[in-house]
Image 1 (cartoon, rainbow, N blue to C red):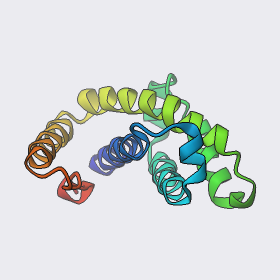
Image 2: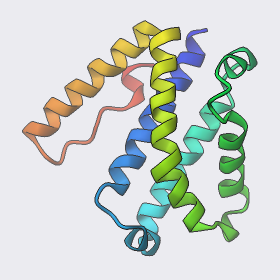
Image 3: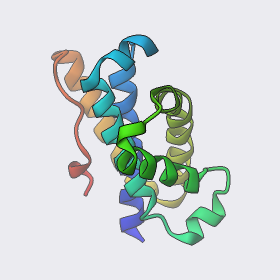
Length: 145
């Protein structure tokens, strides 16, 4: 199903954005920066929503990806926003999200090779654009949808 592939692309793109928001930023600086925290929470929410669109068949075929935990984190940060444990969020964003990105890229490459190639093309184009202008934002998933 092509839609599922697009959800996987959304996960990869959200993971990339999280990495860019946290690059070179200590946990302490991040915790004190409400704009960065909000940006990371938003991208984690996108990941959690996209996970909701992944089929039971795909989830069963990739048990190494903690689909249920990812969705649970999304539910916690969205519905219990008043009691978010920022250390847990930072750990998820810096440890778990990069692992998730690698796993989802592998899944995309295997199950949706055309989407995977388009994603890589968009990433290389965005990288070339940003080397021309350091303030250029990476392209969005709308290019792939």
